[in-house]
View (cartoon, rainbow, N blue to C red):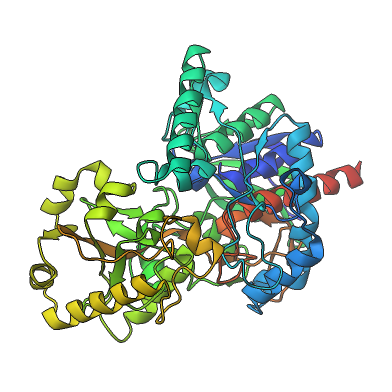
Length: 550
């Protein structure tokens, strides 16, 4: 083997700084490895830090505290039914590794001081399927006091300096229309004030989870460098990864790695050429700007195979001024609303999981223009429920053409360029379903997940008639939380080459990889859960390589 010149040496080099990357860093550092994290941008936290922060952790050890019964067998059945056969990205071995390591990661994070928050009410996205559950599998962490990281927290992508949890949102979204919503709102205000009085600066959602992870990593001695993208891995003559090249403000550095390299740099949500090639659209993503596919390219250059590149974590999103998209969750599910294509016809269950609605928009657009679509709402939707796009400035949305308002359905149809009779017929048919409580076209409101965001006082929590003006139409596009396709990995998070063999010393997790969840979304946190678990698994496997050599 030719002599290699190195600028530095570490045991484990981790590229990226979201849940997958920092979980790997923690796992390695907890095994006494020297760990260096390199992040390409000037902010740490990745997509996780700006997400809801939930993790789908089925059969976790505290299910019994919620009065829920879960088991690996139920989880396996549910994943098999909902995911199906999508190839090696979600092989039986990878599913088993995920199921087996959920309780391991859960307990390890508790041991390291991370405080979990449980949710009894957030259902799986297909709770009616075999093995599905009406709550308990989605978890998150307690809010994080950013002062614990001092000035370093200012480099986080965390956006919301309030102690809000994902489990708050379903009730806060109807704080003006239900007693339970009002009570949760009061509890949230009390929690916020308590933190202020105690001198804390709490963050919630994904910012909280990344705060907990980063604090744990720093306490374990992990070094993190910003503005330092990985550009290539270095192999020896036998094809084993023994190091990497990274760019930095000080120039290119060659770093030798004894345990391995973990790629956790996210997906390719902002790589327009790849998106056009694989998705047919440039994308309307909620992912941060560093999500450019850099880690996937590093893996491809090292001989890795890829899969699921044509899919993403889709979801209906409201097109905002400036071209970015506001991911829609409760708005489209709450009653007194429908989504129609550009002809004025419904084409999906608006309350279904966001990936299903996203897929429906893309599929509909193949035959009827649906990019963009329109979410039609009426007065009670405006007054009773939280609309995350509208609260950012309704006048700005109207000026940008993202919201159109009219006093009648006929006028709205004219303003949207739709056939008046078609839109009127769509609304009339939907209003009939609202009277009976049964959506005969798309079964909206049939499952516990549909009902999670809705009004429980109605016959069907998701069906409210569209009859009281003013009426508003919100421009809907197929947004996403990131991409689903990437490097193929095995049950140990090892990257696989085009022959299906592991590339020794190279690991990947999170959106850098083809998802173990295949083309679907079994439950809340199906991105961050596997990112955390397989980041941890990869970190442990890399550590075992070093420890075995000692």
